Length: 243
Length: 243
Image 1 (cartoon, rainbow over the protein chains, first blue to last red):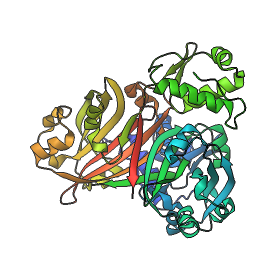
Image 2: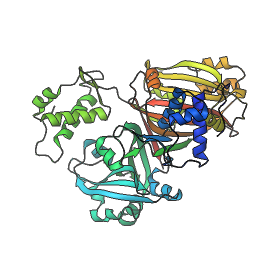
Image 3: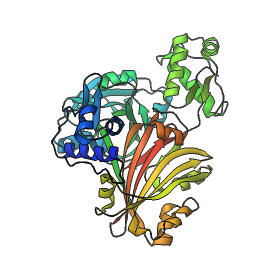
Image 4: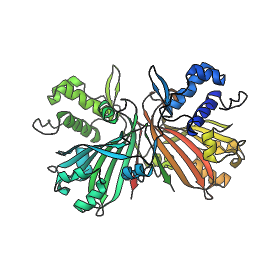
């Protein structure tokens, strides 16, 4: 790696970050590799402990490195770049990136909707919903914990939902229930991953996650699904284009 | 408030949450109001401590209530609903909602761009950028900490940027520099708010925030701004429509 420029106006920790990122981008280090310790970085780059520490800390916060207590600092997997527009084709995005998508269905059951779900699905007081809760994985690693709520009257036979995973929910909607999803509203906000969610997502409580709520509509403007997702912030990054 | 339905399949804590939310939505309690203590909720609704505790915890996690250690639990301000599409008219959105927007400019200075900024702005090795760092407030409360990086060669006179706040950056671009922003790419991910950011944002370190990175382009497809924003997760919620 190139030595740092001690005379530059660019802070040394920043230069060190760039060098470390370079090594990752060029493939000298791959995800899971242990990077040099603070002491090794101090020796190799002639920087102070504070500079080495700050460079590592920043890269951990950017999600490029991660720490294991007592073991060291390692190269993280790159985040999945996910277009917000194409969000409901999660499996397709994964396939295009050469990742193996898999849905683990956690439950399919009839539920009494909460007020929020009832409102989103425009259900009457006595109408129930079907909840399908699933863990959406890439290469066997969980990325998203997702609950879809669907008006019960749209689903003559709950068992058919078990096919989801082999085909997408919206393809199933079209094929089996004659429902064509044409539009969706999505709201999102950053949250801390909760204990129960962290167990499913195999991550830690208190890490950043994205809470996504989507309402999907058919051609007639009837809401056919309300979906609540928790997305691992250390695995996904979203992008969109504005014109 | 209506009593809870003890025979219902809807869990009691959930019913209690709905009752409390109702009181907030109907304006019986307003932001800053202290809500009843666990003991008072137990008495008033005939529920166990666990149920009262869980209802409050969930509402805190939803951002509807907040706690002050040793003082109690209070009604939070509603989140700002912000269309992702209209993100670069933050001030306009605030005005429409009757909130008073204000930009506090923290610094305007020439900087050597990092590799990331250089790439986004398509700058050569020796080209500098102008950084404008500002705190974007609503009703004198900080919502977003934002750094805009602009190629130096586009800005003949840095001082003109001081007008931002009175007019939007993109209006200034058009009026003073003959730059018309027509397109932007935006990437976002959930993060934890860092110590330094929390001081500007008058919030706590470790709370959820949204990191937004935007590159704005003019009619010729030249990148004219790279902007990094940290948005308070407890104050903003984003939405978008997909078709």
